[in-house]
Amino acid sequence: MYVCGLVIPVPEDAMEAYRAWAENGAAFFREYGCVEIVECWEDFVPEGKETDFRKAVAAKAGEKIVFTWQVWPDREFFQAAEAKMHDDPRMDSAGTPPFDAKRLILGCFSPLVTVGRA
Image (cartoon, rainbow, N blue to C red):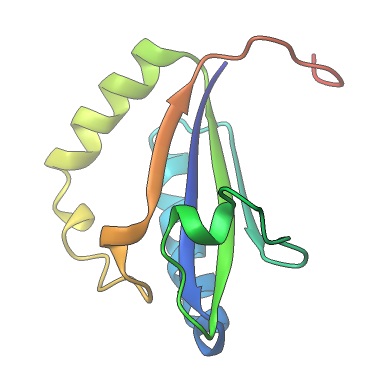
């Protein structure tokens, strides 16, 4: 298992546009072997004293935080799929994302502990 996670500031009034953009992206990633995709819209994001999700992405007033992750079979599979996806012309025709992509955070992780999954 290999997990790619993102934290994204999205204008609150762009939730439906984000949902459509994410659903299109999910279908594309699934085509390339992504096992699971979860897109979460902010419900409770407390303000931290030092840092928090909002500070991490320089969220502005009127923006909500999206926390999303993708599960891939393993790192090598993900890297091969990513190379193929970047060669797919649909990657460039996905349209403009309904958020400021310069402020999103992306990270890929190898699980250390998992509970509740086979």
